[in-house]
Amino acid sequence: MGDSDVTGLDVIEDFSATARCDEGFLQVRRLRVKNRRADGSVSPAYRVDVVDRPKLDAVSVLVWRVAAGGGREFLTRMNLRPAAYFRPAGMNQLFCEEIVAGLLEPGDDGEAGLRTRCAAEVLEEAGFAVKAESVKLLGAAFFVAPGILSEKIFPAACDVTGLKQVVPEGDGSPMEEGGKLAWRTAEGLFDAFASGEIQDAKTEISLQRFLRAL
Image (cartoon, rainbow, N blue to C red; front, side, top):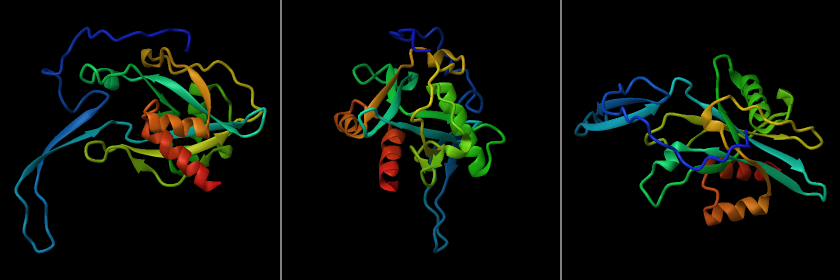
């Protein structure tokens, strides 16, 4: 991971017209609903699409360290993002800069399960072996796009100051090709949010919560 320079994505098949909406990495429920009101009346029927995935929720981890000259640095990762790439021409981008994140697995229950999943993702994506109990949860989970996505993200943070970093193994997926790590200061991150260089909501929310918790 990190040695391959991915320059684009080639579509070898578009099977949208024949694929079922209830199978695949993302599953779409197409519903017709009415609003039920307190006075007993209902609204006209309208259509709602809800996007789920079998592994419903995820964790994000703000990995940080104390820099050699003092002050904190925060780890980001360039991730290959096909959904961003296949936006209309002129609005697309191949990679997005984000913090470490990963889907919850069966058995990742309660706060202990969240911390265990966070530690596993930090090792897999950032190359630091952290103890689950050292992971700090950053408040309640949040929706990213509740108008269409059922997914919630559970934000967390962990300190890797003084820990040895190994080459991250990743999960073996082609979507992890080209992932490059970088360290940024809080000020650098806020500048990147303001300029649009970083457009990932969980990264900005996690940093805000981390700094507020201090």
